[in-house]
Length: 508
Ligand SMILES: [Zn+2]
Image (spheres, rainbow, N blue to C red):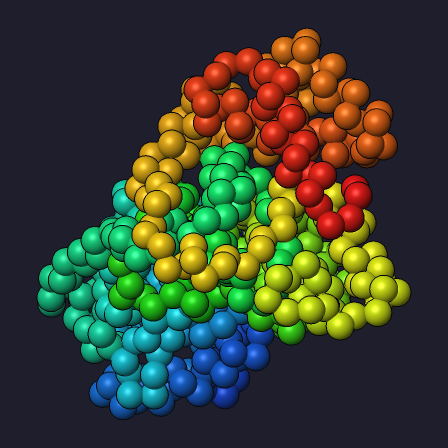
């Protein structure tokens, strides 16, 4: 059916708002006017520039550019359509509207890819969530750049066709050629070379890292430069169990949208570890940028560890912006035309020096700070962000004799097995994926003995701790009990949990 204003060709595409896919109908119709194509329906600059790329690509591929006027409507109009990934569906639409490929071959076809001037098809960021969208929106087949086919094929229950150039696209849609198989790239969990055995001495730090990994508790490390704060944080990351397949896909989708993932990279089951520099911008940390907000370090660390070293060098207002996402496990960025959500279930590790010069309490070197400066420095540590960190410890430099001695502690493999068991115990009790940090108040109290509760109430009264500190301490006590395979929280679990709060450099 091709009337004067009837739709000649229809191709589907996926527009991403954050990670959320939306179906876009690319409708090509003939109109009166100068030859060429005209785009309507809120295309951004990159989509508008598509016309130049597509025209050159079509001509250089020995195909015909329309001698009539083709109007291409991207529907729905109120949905922002961003990026060069619309090139391929637009080119397919033009080729079908000019009868160079049969319109019937477009049934159930969805496409995503940038078209180079020579007709080659290139991968674009966000291929993975686009493929998830194509499956969930039931568009049918998905054409993507061959280089991105492995990434798209990670999504099951979707027919993925990798294409090299427009000539191949035309041959496939005419039925002249069979698609090559797009094999999903294998998954991998690289063995970490970081072992807890390398941490000499430091029994409290080792214990805290284990508790943080088991319960997903945020951790603050205070200590002089070179005392091993970063080393501890990286070993904490190595204690986390590998991701489940659906979690790994979710993480890979965020990295794909951010353009931080090579399209031919295998799916990694390792939880992410992000270590942004303290001079990072708010957009870099929380997410932002022009157009649809891109994920920041916080979302890129989803289901892994976000390590922020030299915490107090980061401006206070940026740290304040971390509070809600850390508590909710989700970031919302609101823009004039869109609201974007990214998941951010991270284990937050903050590290800082104990004073401006860094050497307060350091046996190797004397602190040169004036008392009032130390006081002001520490005042910056207190407050709402610190209140959301469950575990606070001071890390001291290890003396030479300990460094020279044999590694005597447990290895990462031994501790990671205990972490996994504790997590499984929690999951059996509360549901898959639930950690102590995710529990509701009544769930926490239900697993606490009367004596343990009295111990906690006495401590809270005596030390004037906040209601939030009460809640946080109980969560840590829950994790400690789970590490010991104990069902009911006992007074000694509460006492140990309190110790990690009281050793904080400032009272909370
Ligand atoms: Zn100092």
